[in-house]
Length: 318
Image (cartoon, rainbow, N blue to C red; front, side, top):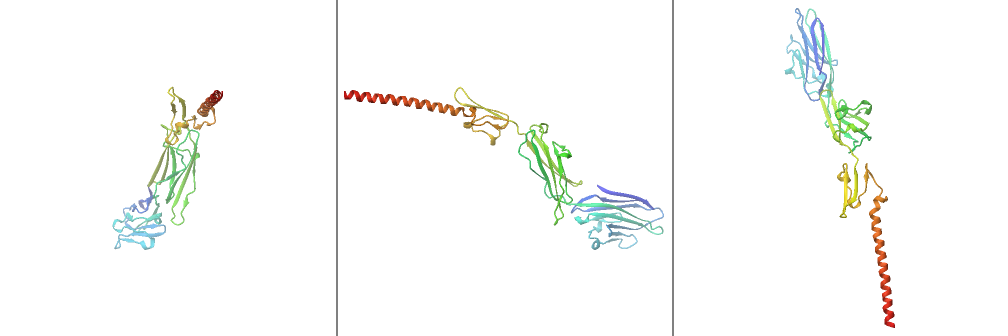
């Protein structure tokens, strides 16, 4: 994208083309085009950054090209520059600003026109944006809160959030003021998101969350996260005719959430039943009943043995 301005005052169709934004380190091409009246000829073309002249083309002077890099701080590729085209070598961030082309006709009119355009030099982030605060799983009704951060760029990157490639409404997004590094001049941008997760957000059981960072048309990076739905799950237990325990799973049970079969209990919508409930303690009650029965049998056997011993002793004495 470029700035293009056109004027017609004595000189016909004077146009200047300056890139709106360029990457730091890239070469830059500036164009200043014009048309002279039939009775006029070119006297000079001068390029300025701000108020400082850095390039001049004068066809009646030898050499016709003059460069003033020591004054302006701009490095011009002299061999590639001419009356309508100026090439700047690898640009730095201090190259940003207003560029003006001054076209002057020779005698007798000496018509002069100055046309300007603004240029911004960007320094994109080295790393892609990062997202923090997203949980491993969500259910409809949960609140999703997260931050997206794009580090160290000039200017600060523009951040946008989408769900399933649909932009999140502005009322659910908070844009923070960029944080500027006073030493490097680079800026960090942060955008937060806060919304209630709905059932429609899950496509095939997953929610696609994206954060995109962009600077003009020169930089664009996106980070994407697929967040699974935390579905309700039920674990029911019973005993088969052979005496073996049976476990029936409904929904999704994850490896980290698998239940030990020796300690099975009912789980409904993620909430575990109290182990002190009759359902959870039924196996324990059976074990206590068996123990009591054994104790009573042992007691009766002891009584019978005692009676037999005393009877034998009595018979021996008599």
